Figure 1 (cartoon, rainbow, N blue to C red):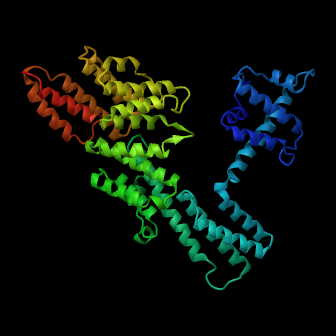
Figure 2 (figure 1 turned 180 degrees about the horizontal axis):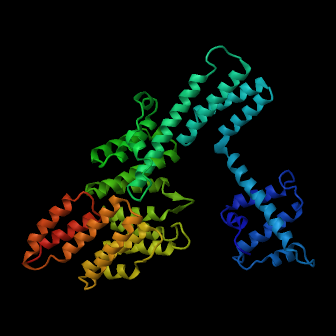
Figure 3 (figure 1 turned 60 degrees about the vertical axis):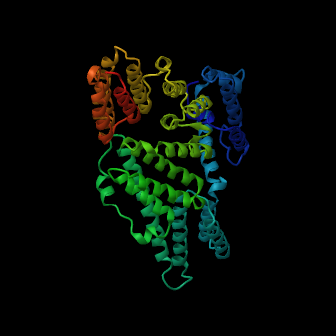
Length: 483
């Protein structure tokens, strides 16, 4: 049976969700269509085939025979059963999300609105008070909390406007304040995301002027330490460089307010913080690697990197490379082995593991072993670029005759991809790297020691360059060579 929405979604459901969905299908309240009796056995058939890894071999004729033994095959009948199952599965997914315990505030607010529409004033007041208490002690993601606050104030305004129970402003000022606060947060948050994206990839420049001119009034910032943190992040992303002292100030502010920030929101803040570390490192402040490593290790222990128990590929590579550059090679090796089967993407997961292992082998100066397992051609640009850079570094370490050829190939790749994919900063980052590898490879003989000083100065002064630590190490080695 070819892949369908139903099969794709079923394969993502947990054991508990599968049980819940089957109960959902057995309920005549939800499942009451023409093919209601066939939907449950149809689901059971699909689930069993998925569990036995036989779903690709399961055809419509097979399903028809199982559901209607001895009767002539009618393809449209199976199509309609599948369509009905799809409709019920969609309803189940939305219902599960809406009725989740984490969504109680919105459930109660919707109930209050329904009570208002039915003219049940006393029940309405009780429910609204319940929502207010829940809102005051909620642990929602900050964006959700602000949106809920606005919806609550807007509902209060709607009640007062319709029933004229109170004299005065009918809650319009409070509604505007809540809307305004949500607006400032949302725009600051989204512009920060866009600025981060702009530093690594080609982007539409339309939000550029908005980012340059964006400002949040001090009276708004004073209302919440969290929004104040978001504003600091935005300003650092907006600036052309990130001073280390500003980064440490932001880190201290986040740590000071951690107890007041919901875990999901805190995880996103630390994500911004780690990306700032990357920008600082790329600009030459390699002294930040130890604290970068500690942040990664702390965030890993809190589960911030995981999605359903697995790591996003780029996060895995970042954790590995930062640990290596912080001198924590043994930790990095142990981390890579522990996550061998925990990297998201069923098509490339083994290649991700090999790439991370190759980095660890290189850190242990096992250059040929690293070269032998580097996977090339990843659909993830971050991994592909790392593979190409690691290859150049290994050929340099091995004094390979192929180095010049590999340098030319890398320069061509950067030149072509830079115009289509990379941001100007990323293009410069890797162009500078390959140019310095070329200069290192040409620094031999009696002039090597003199060239060492020149290269150290050039590498140190360059605004952005990839693999700065390794390049400086190789430049210093030139100075130690005997004339």
